[in-house]
Image 1: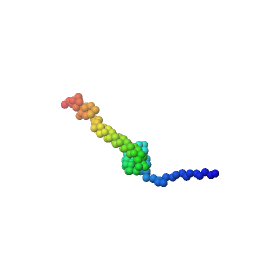
Image 2 (image 1 turned 60 degrees about the vertical axis):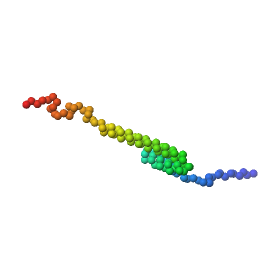
Image 3 (image 1 turned 90 degrees about the vertical axis):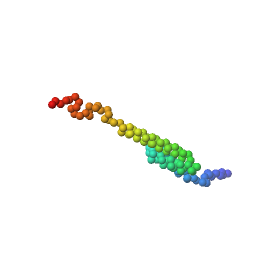
Image 4 (image 1 turned 90 degrees about the horizontal axis):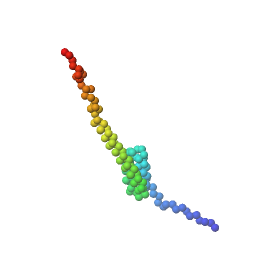
Length: 114
């Protein structure tokens, strides 16, 4: 008696249209880890484009979230550094110096005899 081995069923339709979702996910991960705004914006763009394909919806959403988070953090850091720069530029160092430092020579207590 021989047993018939059932054949493994292979999907009739192999969908390779989730490339945008994968790209969005990879770019989102890279934007969180090291490259910030340079890969955050493409992660958002490819994620939005990948939302149109139902196979890659989850990866697209993850890419959009991570890309958006990294862009938000980068923009907040930029605003913070601009604020610090403006604050430092408006801080005058000569206000803390005593007035006698800038006076004319021989005008502070020394009188010339004629």
